[in-house]
Length: 180
Image (cartoon, rainbow, N blue to C red; front, side, top):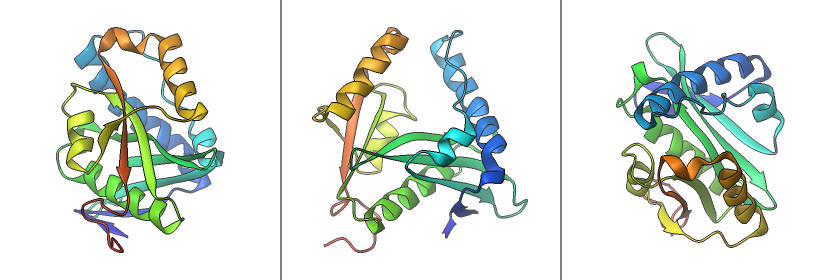
């Protein structure tokens, strides 16, 4: 799969360390923006790769260096975009959008009709970005989604801003082939 100035592929077992490094790098921008000096550490790359669902990685065309990834969980039959990370030096070049569109396409190909996520409402590269990809604010309807809200509360994430759930209907998502 090709994204804008990048090649998107399924992450492999030997990508675990780079997934952690990409997320830690991307988190540094969020930590600085929020002043969240006690932000939880990046997720474990091995765990991401063995969780039900999929991880896609984007490599820059010119260097073949991984610069971002998207992790979509299959949780209780729901496709949930758990993490999108792009290293800040590769930001604002379309890699995040390419990864989201690839993840939506992959989820659609796996038979999902919707994809959900949880994010900050006011951070420009969070909810406003996802809205530009077709996501809309939604309510946590399932036990899985309510457990995410509880987990965020236990971590105190609301102290950094309003958290929202967003959902995209894959039959209506912009940029996906196979839409009716």
